[in-house]
Image 1 (cartoon, rainbow, N blue to C red):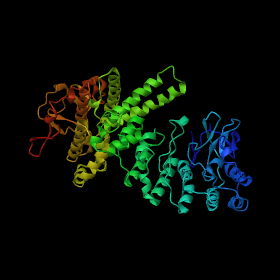
Image 2: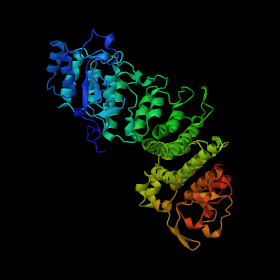
Image 3: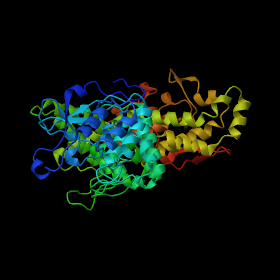
Image 4: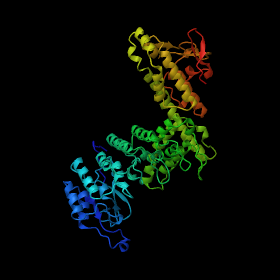
Length: 563
């Protein structure tokens, strides 16, 4: 769906011609409130706001002060939006909420039909942000509340709409932003029928700007909780479902963490990572996996009836297994099956994120056929991680770390002088930030291999030596990058050896991948090597990680301490 700079709502929304505006009483309570009524002035105020027919704030002020329109109707007298001809009671809204222009890519106003189904509704926009702000201020000056019981929906509407102008009006009013349900700072979620639809970068930028302004105004908003006691990170973990980008989720959650929100807070036996895993929220899971301690990656559920020490990985694969089975259930409605099919890649991505962060496959139960089916689903994702993330990530990390050195490759002397000024601490930070694996033996080995390669490259004669030229090995022409790892004992067949007792970083990373695959019973043939395929794994064999070292300045073999 294309989006303008200010958000464009889906084409399948209802328009004002498709709805009716209900005034007066809800059915069933008329006999209790016969002393209340909706005045003609309030009706005019409602219709002028919904249809955006006001051209000046004075029109609003006159209706309120001169004609007695109520901008803050009692709940039973609020305007209610219903699908035309449906006869339903309708969905009630505060006028202040209805006056806010929607700058998002999704509907935030809904009408209700007689069956209780909610239909997304697109309202027109005011002619300018200045007029919108003037109308909102006229309503507030006339008595419309932005805080107090139930009034949170107006501020929350500005958030969901991505409307910075409206948010600024509410902040300028100088009133306390009353906590409510849902919390003001909660991550907006898409309408159910629009599961899987992505929002635009422009909307994400506006949303972050609003959140930052609110936190600046009141930092305690980061401590808001849901009715069941979950913090905002917990709520994001439950509701993300990937309409937003990873960059947005990272920025939003970082804002919360910086202002005191706890990434490991336990609610009803679950941490936010448990919730993200069980809900299939891959971006929140990825953020949390990078922020929590290694022990929390494999932390079991606890303290609540119904939980039995399940890890986040177990919850994620259980969700995946359930989504697969629902998607294949012929007796279920097609909409239900389609939604389950859309959940499958979310759970798969969540599992891969957990595996990259050191989730322990060995903690999964294997007692029942269902347990074993789930474990096989995890092994499929583990194979994908080994094939797509590890080798590529290692090469990306060493290239990023060496990037400041590369411009000096033209002459050997330039390369050596630059190496003397090389910032190794910055390189280490780059390696840690670029590598996507952590908290496992494989991650430790790959990180150590990349680190040693980068340090060794600084002692090379040039970038050409680091990258490696072509060589005839066993009658085959291959490219051999810097062979900076020394084997204490080299038992490889001669036809795969370029320099006896030496291997390169590719071979070491491949060995780490193969060892990880073997640990989980994944066949060696399932791991794509990505280089010198004709040799199989023969060029990557060495007798244990303790045999991997380097040659020091005295020409002596020294262990790298990788085990």
